[in-house]
Length: 514
Ligand code: FAD
Ligand code: SF4
Image (cartoon, rainbow, N blue to C red; front, side, top):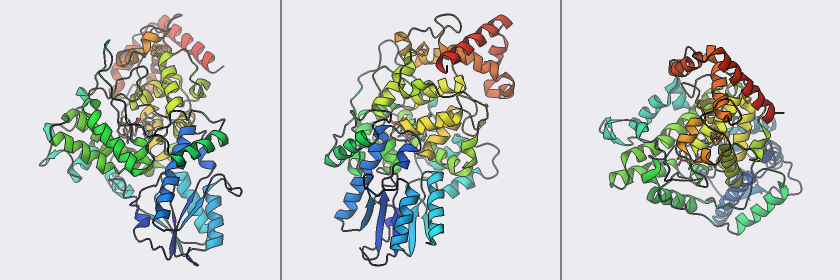
């Protein structure tokens, strides 16, 4: 350990990039890495045990690797007797003790954390250098440039720009296959027969480091939601690469067709299961994008599947990060639909007689995972239709998924799912009745409700609340051209029908939020 540090390099739990720019010119004789496990990051939202465990074990594997290189790592374990519990507090103490010439930090994934660390360094009078995160294709500044002067931000324009700039799936200056988007081909459901053979995703049995973390989390966070029993996530870059390879060779070909489909007891279907590895920076997004394109060029995966997958990573993932940094901190306060309901308690237990919610929340608590349509069109849709306050919805999503980091979770939840940003992320609220869930899954077959019924004893709460949503927001949404059909259908309801729907919705709200 050098006597007077030149650089103290702060590495956060979601910055486990072995090629981090903060390590570019690391000098073992003069620099040290600083990492801290702190309770605050597990408790500021009531985090799922698997989410806490994944961050901690991935951090410990990263630490061990650096130490094997002979580098100094000042590592603050969660169970150190004098761990003060917050990143800012722990860093403050280290700065007082070490007085480094400068602190280096790659752009964090959370506005709150970035502010806290900036303030700490400033209080201690230690210069802080915040470095651009090379993990992403687009820098914060490039996105701001893209957004400048635009009245509306839309994924599609940004995505095309990214495809061109990075020469992904291009045939000269035209998109491969003559279209930018194969969405219409990517919305199949399984029908009565259910999914064709679903390969079991590669699982990673906990090693000694992970087992110790699982024990620590089970004891220390015993009252937190979720289970640790199924924990098998990739926790190192090597494992993350194997997980990607497994997806590309076993599931990618069907990813496009069944991207939006859901099925009981099939949590992963043909999804990649790599979001946590990407977000912790164990996996470079370029490997995923280039790997998928390679399979297409070799004729081993169809274009709609490959384009659909690439759009998620080169498009959506980069786009939501851009939106987050462009609009924070004000973005987190938005509530365009003035939703005020609390989040029903069953989101934390899965105990509800609505089968779709029971399945998706049950799976979420068991695994810390749900795929996109389960998040958007089951848990998200219900919260939107019920009128839950977006902050409560956001805190739940940030807590319960192993891949949850605020830069990606918040725009997806607040914007795409809850329309709380008034249309920045989505051109209209994603609202649908129980009939959508019936079409895209087999959940309704095991449910006591009828997705076609809006009123009466068997009325599906999604369907009741769908009509109620349209009636509640009739005026606000009437000017939105993409909502015109739905609003017109609501306008056609007779006064008696409206009253019956509104009564049924009020009764349902009373039942779930007594
Ligand atoms: P796949 O479906 O196989 O997709 C491949 C990859 O594309 C993902 O790993 C992910 O990196 C990226 N991707 C796909 N959709 C999105 C998207 N909408 N935004 C950003 N990246 C995307 N994703 C997170 O990584 N963290 C979150 O906290 C998160 N919260 C969400 C909250 C809500 C309400 C919604 C609707 C979506 C959220 N998503 C989040 C996006 C998406 O649901 C997950 O990325 C995806 O389900 C992860 O599973 P997978 O790796 O199997 O993804
Ligand atoms: Fe969900 Fe309604 Fe279908 Fe039941 S009937 S599973 S509540 S959509």
